[in-house]
Image 1 (cartoon, rainbow, N blue to C red):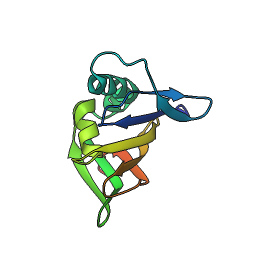
Image 2 (tube, rainbow, N blue to C red):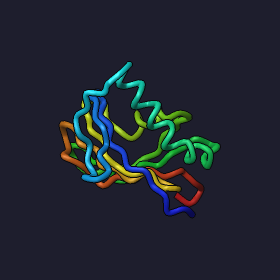
Image 3 (cartoon, rainbow, N blue to C red):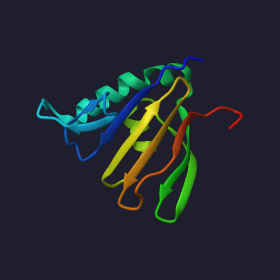
Length: 128
């Protein structure tokens, strides 16, 4: 297993930001071009491609997603990055910050019902 990981920060409000590795944060960017949401999907597609290669069945498990009345876990089907984001988030405005690892995604989702969470996305297996 690789120790490589990639940090990310996305929002569906589509403000353009740039990740600053020195300060470990995203900052507003004047360097926006094209459709911001399409750029988000393209970037996310690139950083999760290895997870799709490992998950031929395309079933995923989310653990501890914070909603207004508690933390929830569940399963969903996603065969592309856009559907993966949909399964990891909520149907409202959100900010998602996290890290993609060799075998999972650890992230925090902030939205109108939660200021963040400690959520994990895993490839669904027979064991989980």
